[in-house]
View (cartoon, helix red, strand yellow):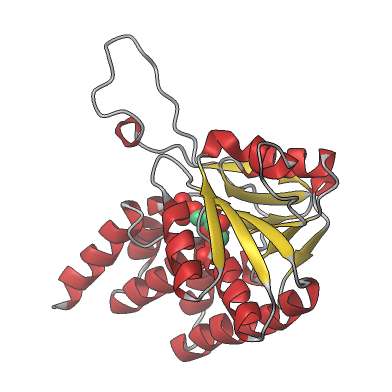
Length: 256
Ligand code: RUB
């Protein structure tokens, strides 16, 4: 594939969520930027997903001349450190609730499983694009017991009702780490709020390069992801992310 085609393919895959999650987006954007490093390509890449400070942080570093290999090494090393911290958090018999698809979360859970921890996972399907299915598939492939719920059943999943087990911990990823909270997939705020009410600790599992002091816009996505053939006059909203206040969070687990 020539360079231009590769750049356009990466940009399209980020836009269409074929490449998803803050870490994968940042990595892919870095590859695309390295093909055509310029202010213009940086702007274009940042415009694809506006709620992604990690992508911006990484492109800033590349722009200032940090070698690609060093940036990529960070992703691996940070994940390894996060895995070790998460391992200590997980107890045998834990029922861990998660949402959407986070590479930082999934990798840490698989690491814990491979280290012999015995736990199971509840997760939500994450409409409209069903990233929860990817989480369920990857965890299952690693031999972890997974139960997936429709999004609107998250109250049931978190409240030990209708035959569900008591959730002992919530693990969420993050797109942005901010001074007073975090931003993650839509649904995360209500999950964190219910968890607080149910006295279930919420842990954010995230690479520290997601931190920003800037104001982060919240992405709204295309309406046809929700309903392809909307009757005239019906409005549809498709917000992709939301802010979760720190008061709902037990801890942010980063590599630092
Ligand atoms: C993905 C999402 C993830 C974070 C962290 O949303 O909200 O929890 O991006 O992911 P989307 P990671 O599917 O819209 O990109 O741990 O992979 O960086």
